[in-house]
Length: 217
Image (cartoon, rainbow, N blue to C red; front, side):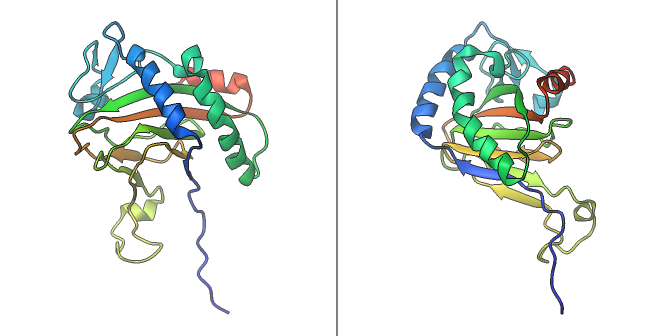
């Protein structure tokens, strides 16, 4: 007997959130205040790794990552409450039924041409991207195969081997939940509208474990 066994898959969640139209409408209203001129914004694109902060809405894109943890922002409680059941259900499908906690969350705006370079979210157990607004041609998200052989000279056209990256075209209301170690980046926004996302990290375990992980970010 012969068979192909696909060992060690990288499990992720891709879902369109229920009632996302109403959720996104509320989020857009809250984001107007979040990205007011009084709040610091971290620039995106090629300045992401420079930790460049500004009060302006940079044409390179901007994020609240270094200024406001949305997990503790009361104006965003409705959003995390709405997602909690979906995330718990996903974990239960993985036979994980213990505690989990949101650690931190931030919003990001990508105007035309803006992107974010490849990075990961270690040591977080899970990370997520949620699309508040994802117009056509706003830029795919690209996940890099974490298996070491995929970074070598493998034939790219062979099924199961050499699949160096995996692209997802975002749409409004899409939630992507993936292991925190998984490297990812986004393509530049080629539309004339902003791509708007909310990202967050999750730790499985006690609240104390989540608080400790926050200190490492």
